[in-house]
Length: 277
Image 1 (cartoon, rainbow, N blue to C red):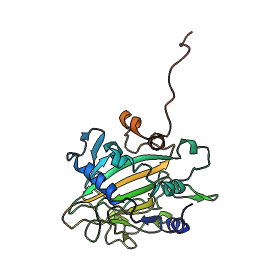
Image 2 (image 1 turned 180 degrees about the horizontal axis):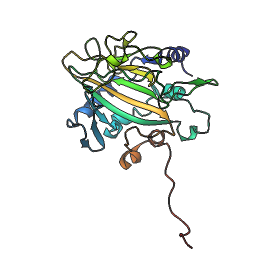
Image 3 (image 1 turned 180 degrees about the vertical axis):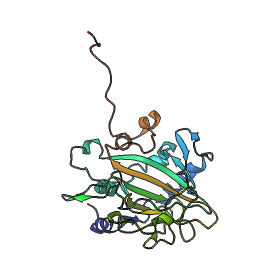
Image 4 (image 1 turned 30 degrees about the horizontal axis):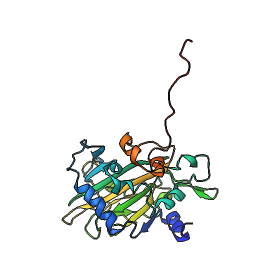
């Protein structure tokens, strides 16, 4: 049973803050794993982990980060957020629950240094089916719900996540969105009316509907901001960037984790009759 306050705040604001979602040992294991990966440039692979950027001055992402090992595999169904995610995505008790009901369409570690940020994106208007927010007939049915987990402390000047509370229900675009939106030359959410920055300690998580307008402040401090982002949706979704889990990953995952990473197994193609027979 979810805390009614979590339900209220997620509906009202579009996000909840979960302090201490990961313990210190879990955070350390994630950082140690990342330290063991040679720095990747966009487009480079290290095993089944892929270097990536969104095409702006937003830092560097390591996509398919659950391929990096146990420290990130355990985040697939981490108890600090799994039941909340299932509740907000919806589907439990319906025809598609035996397929998940969840599917991770994108998971990555993000690194940002001084001068880097990501501009504002999403919001209730214009609408998007992939990240729609809906509550209907007594249950949530959200197209995408994210768990963003801090792997370093993120305070003033560290480039924290910024959101516009309630914007997942907005019927109008923000009048100043074009000044702060994602663009090749870079942008920051700082200065846009209504946005709040969420300070985080290493191990904290933010669970939010991807329909909320969000982005980040610009990092001005020395050092590096590290987070992990896991995007969950219903089991019938598909990978956002065309990735697929490796056979090695699927072989070592627990049944529950495997169902979230690959909700539907492919049917065997072994015809009993030949064409023309």
